[in-house]
Length: 113
Length: 109
Image 1 (cartoon, rainbow over the protein chains, first blue to last red):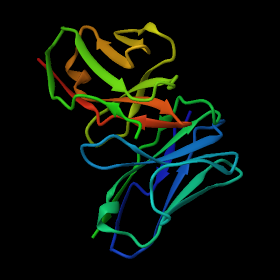
Image 2 (image 1 turned 30 degrees about the horizontal axis):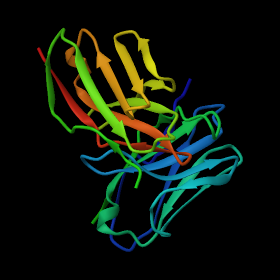
Image 3 (image 1 turned 90 degrees about the vertical axis):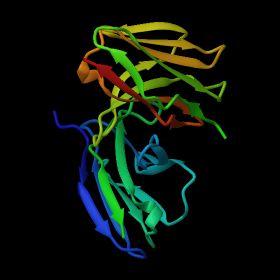
Image 4 (image 1 turned 180 degrees about the vertical axis):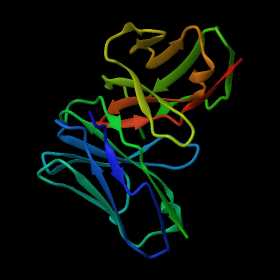
């Protein structure tokens, strides 16, 4: 069975640009969460989506937004990129919203120059 | 601010010995706790989840939870060089998962 997939694997952008990251959950999983991980830190929670609705939001600016599609895949959008947005962006899926066992995708490495 | 605290390490353990990783959390109402393993350059991989006080064993791994002390630990028996990685402790709080910074574990051959 395929695990969580994310695209692209690597991305280089310049300050002020916009980026869209994509995630497909494990088949049958309905909840997707997004995390940002900078070097030397644990993943920081950005969003959780379940049944196309936002169920949780972390302490990130409004430049960060996301959505979930009817097939449960998800996109994370970041506008007006800053140097500090350079990080590994991780998507995790779980069966249900209340199911906290989350399984991570390989991540997207974003570099902002 | 609710937090999960871990010693960043590195923790060096001889091959074949028991590695003990510790974690504390600040939210008294947290009910779900997780240990993830993360190899350098890779994404976190779920090792164990634990929800009740006491021990939970899975192969060479044992998770221990003490809610009164707000303490979670992970024991790795018969440590192998392939266990060298960063171990992330996580706790559910306010309907989201909070991660610690991770402990780097180095198994000495």
